Length: 223
Image 1 (cartoon, rainbow, N blue to C red):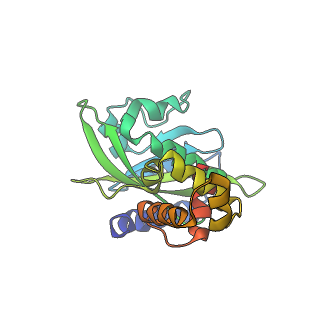
Image 2: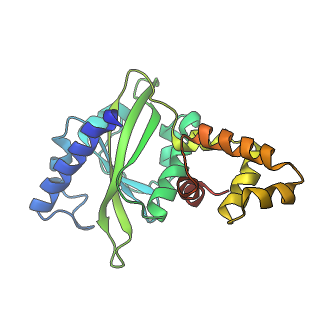
């Protein structure tokens, strides 16, 4: 996704800077030196505790965007996301939790609709990734690099997944369970041709072409 590439590049730059200054530790993320590093970015930056799913701090640019009094967000939990995010993009919370819980590779690229200090909604895109891992190697602290976009990009995978009908979800669950199309037809008392049509529609809606891709989505979002 070309629109997300500058965000990913900025993530890499900030991550390398923090590492060079020995700031990639849980004890350093609220320090003045850490905040100075993320404040230098031209993008919106949020640091999250993805183990307990709560915000830790934001950079100066995002603080001004929200109209916050401070950059360090002490005593806030996941309701922070619900208060700053439009209901139409609540799906990003589910995608984020699934991404870090399953420790998926690469970046999590999402679209958000956020409430600014003027109480207006603005569409942003963000790239997230683990920044610090715990003793077991699991994601502990993550960073999101965001920017405002004039128009919303195409629908996310979760939004497309949410458009599946009840019958399509039933077939997805059976495919994920290892059943063949012929077995599914017998199980649901429909023709194999009908199953084939449903599968084509499922793949078209999700923008995928094979069962392995479908299985990955089920692992993320459930059948």
